[in-house]
Image (cartoon, rainbow, N blue to C red; front, side):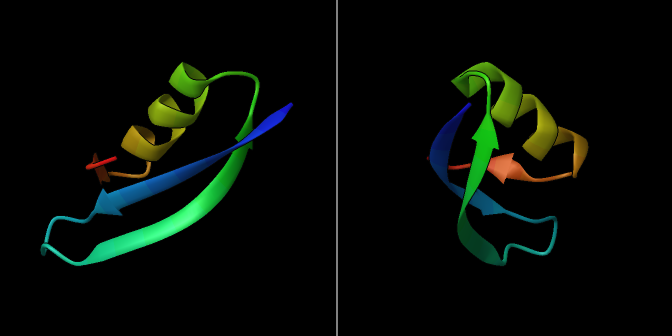
Length: 41
């Protein structure tokens, strides 16, 4: 697995940054979307 850096926004507009492990970029994006985040980068 690789580690991907992300920057997301929640429904209230608050921005969060972090790192998440995943098999690929799209799996990390899917997990973040399931958590109800909007990906900004």
